Amino acid sequence: MGSGFKRLMLVLLVLLGLMLGGCASGPDLRVGISPTYPPLAFMQEGALAGIEPDLAQQLANQTGRRIRFEIIPFDRLIPALQGGQIDLIMAGMSITAERQGQVSFTESYLKVGQMLLIREKDIKRFPRALFDQSAGVRIGVERGSTGEQYVLKTFAWGGVTHFDTTEAGIRALEQGSIDCFVHDAPTVWRYSAELATQHQGLVGLFEPLTDEPLAWAVRKNDPALLEQLNLELARMRREGRLQEILAKWIRTQVLVGGTK
Image 1 (cartoon, one colour):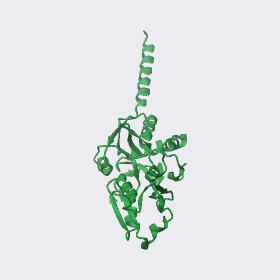
Image 2 (cartoon, rainbow, N blue to C red):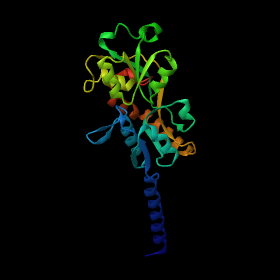
Image 3 (cartoon, helix red, strand yellow):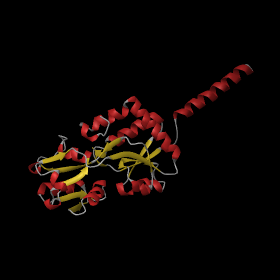
Image 4 (cartoon, rainbow, N blue to C red):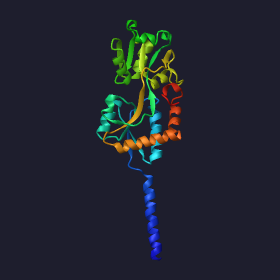
């Protein structure tokens, strides 16, 4: 075997190594998720399902990095990110000023807003009664949600009941101990418009009270990952993948601000 052939084989082996190395774009991406928020993220037959898991799979397809989910309670996601337990939060998290002081957000992939869930028999009262101080409307919110923040800021004069879970608030509404339940669009849509999960007698008012962008979050000292995620999101939009995933899980236009 001549020296020239050996050199050629060595060059080919090096090139092959570079090509194979290029298929794996980095270590596993540890994604923090809280699967209690349909249709963004929830458990379905023992497996993660929803918009965020599908977006994570698309992200893996585009980057070549394997996704490793870490299931964490929502209120512990940011501390877990800051502490290095995870690299990225994908959990239907709204961009707020307070959170922006703690983490860096990607470009928003979906806009939602707070909406009203009411009893069908009360439809003539709302939403006018909500803004009437003399109406004595009893408002229900989920503790720790952006809906709670909005209500406490906007209706400080009203009677507000705080619930630990969305389901507890829905039961209270059905039983008549509150007059309306304020939550974000996916939740209101799920309980009033999705055939598989809707509650008879409840109606959603699909006029957003707020405008809330949802995004992914990374550590403030990880600008390289932030830039990569924004590039991948832009690619998803450009190729129509983002719209396909949103349409799969949100079968109504009212939830998607500017994106149908």
